[in-house]
Amino acid sequence: MSILKEENIRLHVNVSSKEEAIRQAGEILAEQGYISETYIDKMFEREEVTSTYMGNLLAIPHGTEDARDEVRSSGLSIQLLEEEMDWNGNPVQLVIGIAGKGDEHLAILSQIAIACSEEENVRELLKAKSEKDVLDFFSEVAE
Image (cartoon, rainbow, N blue to C red; front, side, top):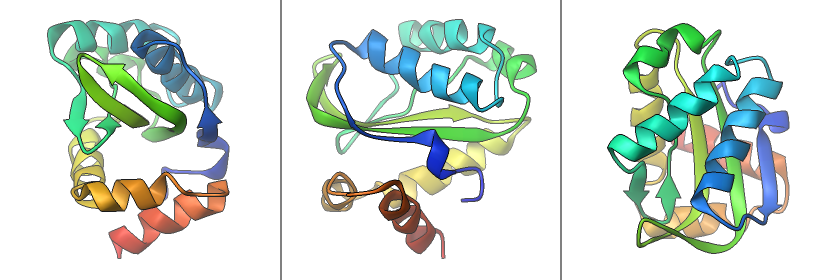
């Protein structure tokens, strides 16, 4: 997954709310130049329409369909939360922010779904000691 870089990964993240987690996911994407700041608002809009909780401790906040023009290039942000948090009544500890250029978001979602299809895989990922451990996890799954 070449759209995932060490500087897009945060370990031991403490957030007090789903909203804070979504904002941080978007800010990482914006800081790395993948999106405009407006895309972050669209991430909140998406969450209002339908939850981005995916199961297995995973949430994947991303923008609405009409936010495509706010995406400069495809990218991911990953936050490994220090503790499970409530995401619309579901436990989440892994937050992956997604910015997909054109139709690339579908392929990105597919790769994430495969990588995180088993809760035990997610729990292993959450034990990562470094950003490189996270990169290694996703590269092993993508092979």
